[in-house]
Image 1 (cartoon, rainbow, N blue to C red):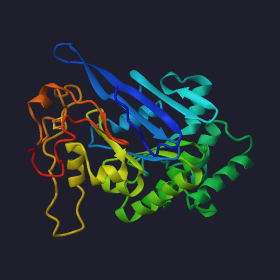
Image 2: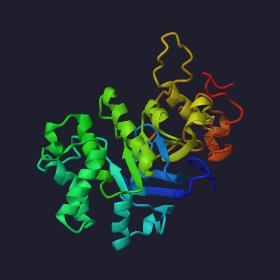
Image 3: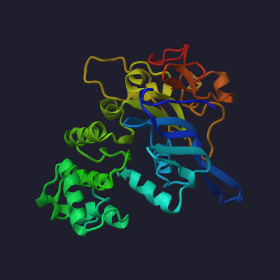
Amino acid sequence: MSEAHSGTSQKATLISVRDLAVHFPLRGSWFAEKHVLKAVDGVTLELKRGSFFGLVGESGSGKTTLGRALLKAAPISGGSAEFADGEVTYDIAELKGRELQDYRRRAQLIFQDPYASLSPRMTVRDIIAEPLEVMKLTSSRDETNERVREIAAKCRLNLEHLRRFPHAFSGGQRQRIAIARALVSNPGFVVADEAVAALDVSIQADVLNLLKGFQRDLGISFLFISHDLSVVAHICDHVAVMYLGRLVETAPTRKLFSKPRHPYTSALLSAIPSLDPDDRTGGQKLEGEIPSPTNPPPGCTFHTRCPFARDRCRTEEPHLRQLDDEHFGACHFAEEFDFTREHGG
Ligand code: SF4
């Protein structure tokens, strides 16, 4: 089994994932043949406490399913995911009853769409207070109100805002309400799934800085799921790249951006628009669609789109392996080719 690490080695591990699989059984409509959709397959990673861990890939790469599996919101069908925070250690796949309820307080989700995720019939106060009331985390209305005011202020919402309904707010303000709701139970782990993708670029930095402040000041660990590598470069300490349900590269952000060791990562980086109008470097462009996870290509699943592919790639699957300190990649030729050049040599 390959090993992957995230964050700096001095930090304690908050979530340890080993060979994790999320498979959904499907039944073929023509021949009643049983297929399996491997949304997540053999993922190994470690999320350090207080880190900002980026998870990137195209739509259909499995990153949202992986995030949901770590929140026990998608069924884990193989491998393990362990959460260790202070006095508690949980096997996420086995959580139920009171332990699951406790985990729900400790692990929260920020949704992508701040318009759809907030009930239009509830005041902002009631939206933020709801997790406290549902999970019975406070013993009186006064205590609930105090906690709501406290987290609202941290999200730059004032008392007047708490009395209004969501429709009175802009997209950025709504996302700050959604963040206050996610953080009101004082979680140590937050999955932010495309949390700024629906916002104007001018507002994205405001929300990103707010999240970064919570990491810095409260020590919250974020799993930041995004298709936008320029946003990930701005905010994440460590990045993992997913393709067809598997990790293909993981490294500290600076390393991954300066010297990608997988052609898929290099192609994603090439898609970031350059601010230099004379920049013609560009690297290789990503062509074609991501294959169906119900019928992934044999060998390296990226070989159908990889400009560096060789015969070996069509039959032999590359496993995630350590390339140097904290840098892991799943390519047979990670050491041989310069993936920032346009064609394999
Ligand atoms: Fe490309 Fe082969 Fe590396 Fe896969 S193993 S990424 S097909 S060069």
